[in-house]
Length: 194
Image 1 (cartoon, rainbow, N blue to C red):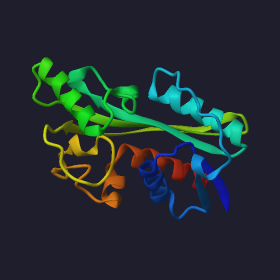
Image 2: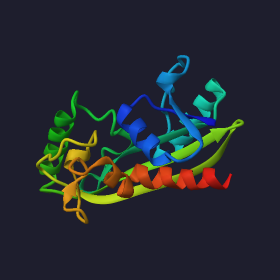
Image 3: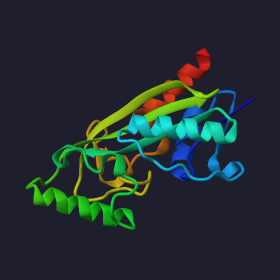
Image 4: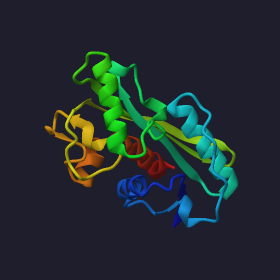
């Protein structure tokens, strides 16, 4: 079995990643499963640049093939915000972040907006990028958070084909359509070919 480091400590992301890559001859480790490594400072200005830098950094530091992703929410009426700052967007809790986004939408005269989740993924090993891809899911912002599943911005991300937010659907169904699902299935296909 091959060991693959997923450069995250986010339990929700790790659960999704392991579920999507299930069936491959892989042991997916998180940063919590290995000796401590100083946290990587994100300096890139795109999802792709951040994913590449993070994958190379943790692969070098751990000696393991490493997959890293950077993901976030882009709201069209807010010119793509929160974008690459999704995790660091002001607010101590997600309800606080939601309230701030709703206030920003109000300031622009937008009751709602089309939006997308983006996931840029990079696999690094042997000092180089071995594979990279980008997954997206299109939807819209709902002003009433709904659902208890998922994590992050899922309760305000309405997915029209299902008529629900991503927090209202189960993990397997979410993985079929989500940005992370698209990106990690592409990684799985690459690993099967390699």
